[in-house]
Length: 120
Image (tube, rainbow, N blue to C red; front, side, top):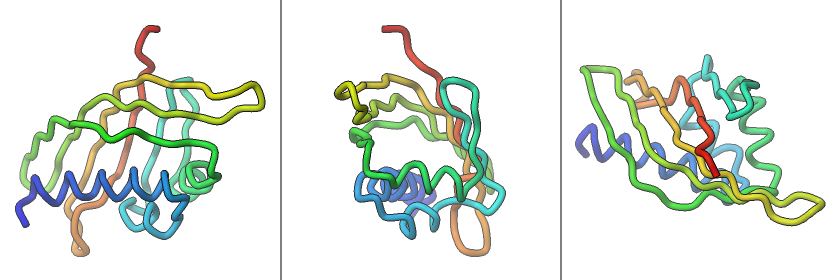
């Protein structure tokens, strides 16, 4: 598998884990020091991100990413549409995400994700 294929698979597993509420699948793609920055500026660690993302109240649509690789580091950038169930109905978040991945002894892992809300 090429680095590009491995990185796209890494993101697919993160999204699939979120959509299936599979904490083990999601945690497996994140580095221990992972930081997830939400559109509102709050942030999560790997464990708190997985806990929130696997509650069952959200679904991420499939997406296309631009991937740039520099040796053992990579940046993945692309749109993300998330559907969140709220007490008042469904909320749809349109954003662009910048993810950073690092090659480790156990393969590629995400070390960071920065989500930026797109204007309505």
